[in-house]
Image (spheres, rainbow, N blue to C red):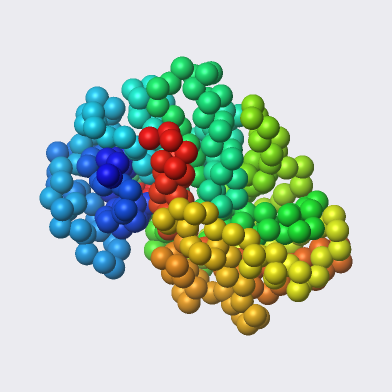
Length: 345
Ligand code: NAP
């Protein structure tokens, strides 16, 4: 039996990827689509400027987009995937949770709240237990679960593998982020063609805080954040999809390249439909991963690692993930699969 799913913010860059992910999906069936008031009442074909190379699924194209309001959501929707701008998510996601909907959200609001699970199922599935705390504290019948920012999600699985193997003391990361990460109205062509922009507002703070929460330990009541020091510098470049990141780590134990490769390759996926069999793909070639060549591996859900080198006190490497698949839509679908497996739907 499938679970009925609504997508709120369905017409944007992440919303379109959610449709690509969920139509079809073994567990979820899309039964409701919402966007801004300007789109409400239109068919999805009319409302969305479709920018994915596969065609809009025919059944989705003819669905009517409604306003983003729990009162307009059909009662039989069991899970809501949210891809709203964060300011809108902050205003409306709690209303959906209060109305009894389980919300799996991409928006940045609430990600570091103590009672909100911020999860990558392959890394910290146990943090989903925070929902018990959330329900006690907020009195919601519904629930709110977040996936991290797309740049955070790219580096955290290899960091988790290296933390298990050697212990992490410090992380420094510099990113080369694709334009789709800013959403459809994010960066104009005049700004980004023939250019690189060495500032992405708020992104550095997100990488520095979210990664420590994700790598933290949950004791059944709260998450103790990892005490590694994390420093990020975030840059926008004119690629379409796929965030490439250069990472330097200080490790507690001495780390070798051979052991680091083994730790990354052995780091397991989750037993969920959208999790790849091998989560982290390690390249031997020094000039990989590259966005155009490597972002689509395993339906855009794999993390690619390359350029592993020993440094004084730690390791250096590059990593890459598809920002709107693994970094956004696929991440919230994976969290939906985890919620289903754990009995929250
Ligand atoms: P986007 O392309 O700008 O799409 C935003 C969506 O929200 C559209 O469906 C839009 O509908 C709807 N919306 C805008 N204002 C609204 C309002 N006042 N009420 C209801 N709906 C409204 O943004 P995006 O890139 O898909 O990002 C969505 C969220 O995911 C953001 O919070 C972003 O930070 C996060 N995220 C994005 C990425 C990425 O790689 N792009 C990765 C991780 C997380 P209309 O079409 O009607 O305007």
